[in-house]
Length: 184
Image (cartoon, rainbow, N blue to C red):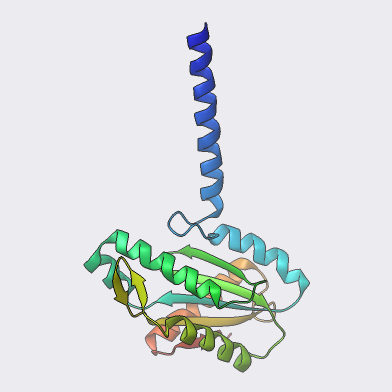
């Protein structure tokens, strides 16, 4: 009876630990531990009622090169380092997430116009990439592109915000613009 009871307790403990892990992964990126797309969408939808926000999506240029030439573990370490540094240049109240792949997204309350938003995001990227990242003992210089939109003026739901940012980011990459505004 004690052995069976011990087995059931162990099973229950494992079940609870797995449930907590699944709950965590539902809202966090498994590599960086940052909030994921779902968590960001929920948070931004809730915050849009509080007033205007600048929302930006950033991706790492040539990330696939780093991942393929140095291995997935190196790429994961680079993502973590970029996420940590990028977050350090944002306002304390900013939402920050790693929705997937090599992109990060952030939003902060602001009532600025698009040129001012672009200037601020450009400054964040410049500061973030000014120094090389130390990844597994190797100095890595990174360049990034970003897209920017003003919410809720240009998009008022998480899905529309993401679509707009992805479209503008594609434009930024294709025209080699460091920061591309979303235009309707």
